[in-house]
Length: 267
Image (cartoon, rainbow, N blue to C red):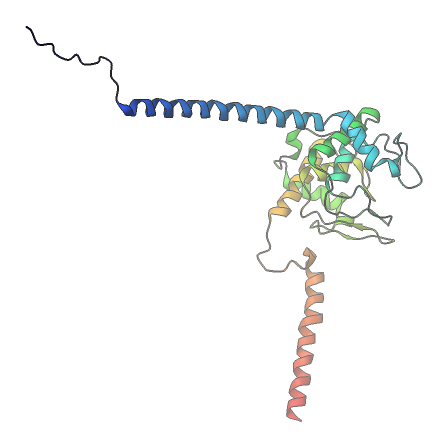
């Protein structure tokens, strides 16, 4: 009688195979979930930014924060001027520098910490532009700082230096007003100031300064912002005037103090 040989089970797998399959499945599932989550988050963020910059949202922000002074119809009140014709560029300048909303009445609105996000400012600007059109944002090349700095310096000295100083350091005006320093002013806000004429500044339209000339002035001011003083303290960048005054007050004052000390010592 023939002896039967036990048959081996066919297709038997290693115990590690199941663990490997489970691990691969988890990795694939996790990767798909992570990708889907990132896509949803990006879509949500994009939709939030778009919705935050709509005219309707800008109108709500304006009514809540600006209408008290400028009126619900933006025609102004006793506490604030009309906004007809100022445009979104003026809104950006005033709000991105913290000058608006105004903290208190005074000779002029001071620069202070910004109270709104870029999207909120853009939304309010879009609302104002929709009902009272005015100056808008320039082409990017106007702000690129690639103009003629030499020509810009000459134009700045002719048109701006009497208030802002030849080095853009600012200066005092009458009745408690002042021209601010331009060391930290962005190219967009330099352009906006020339076009909209905030505070006591005159408006430089294209008949006064062409767009190319404005670009040259921006280039010159960006050059000043990037230029360091190799000699130490700039003393307002006023040249011999401030340097001579410094020597008279501190230099001669120090000599007089030393003389008095030597005299007292000898006595």
